[in-house]
Amino acid sequence: MSYVQDPHKQIGYLQQCLSSDKKPLGLFMGAGCPMAIKPDGGNGLPLIPDIAGITKVVRNQLSTSEAHKTILETVEGHFKKDDRNDMNVEDMLSHIRALRAVAGKDKVRDLSAEELDKLDKEVCELILKLVDKVLPIETPYHRIAAWVDAIGRERPVEIFTTNYDLLMEQAFEYRRVPYFDGFAGACKPFFDLRAMEEDMLPPRWARLWKLHGSINWHQVVDKGVFRGTTNEEEGSKRVIHPSHLKYEESRRMPYLAMIDRLRAFLKQPTATLVLCGYSFRDQHINEVILQGLQSTQTAIAFALFFDNIDQYSQAVKLACERSNLSILARDGAVISGRINKWPEKGAENVDPD
Image 1 (cartoon, rainbow, N blue to C red):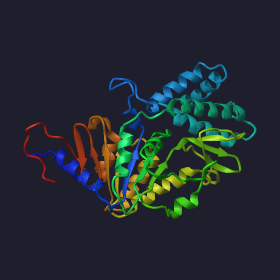
Image 2 (cartoon, one colour):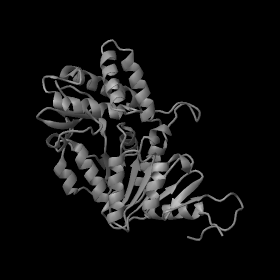
Image 3 (cartoon, helix red, strand yellow):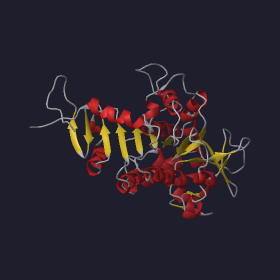
């Protein structure tokens, strides 16, 4: 006799975890979350496109620019020679910065250091225009902020995101929910690694960890990383996407500290991580999540997917290998390492587990 999963029971388990005021609770927000915000209604365009959408716009803009067209063609030629298809904007930034790291004052693969710097800056500025949006009133982001602030907790709620936008910050501030994002100060907030590591703030302050940087982070040479809405200092660069940096340089960047917070969170017994809008396409982050769930058997993760389960083959594969990673999709689930479809209305033989 075959069994199917009971979606109501699984939702009950999730609600029970989220209602706890003692367990470590975390929410992981991927690129699919801004896609859910549609200012013009359900059939309109999303407030912020996903990586594929951002890539399409950035490429179109660069290909029609006299200043950047030739440089873009050279970079795309590199990907073709290297048999790397489906290049997205993050792949492009990683490639540009990897070349820049070895170019020095010379050229590498037919691109000069000046050309690479120019392309890096333009890609980041185009991304800024696409993701620097004002959050409409009363969205799922506001409901997340309200949930974070709903009850007193022994431990802070931790929000992890790969998104560069400022939507979660806007929702927190609209709801007047205090949060800490690794920066301190008012006039020119600076990245404070010591404050992150010591973590002495009250638990009512949410923690917001931006794993791929943010449109309002800037690296100033020999001074560090700062947060702000303007980029005023000469030679400063936007800290967007953790490209392949040299170890010495990456230690000064917030990326490693942010990913360390995810590792530390998953080491806590009974930690619950809920992933939304994340399709498990970032292998580095996948490794951190899977290693955390493997080393802490009492930790649990729920991945919530918008589409049918067969659209997420990578996530399904990982969930089948880790019994404490559950997938809840539109038409089915992976629970305790087993794939099942949701029952049709009126169906019997629901798995009691």
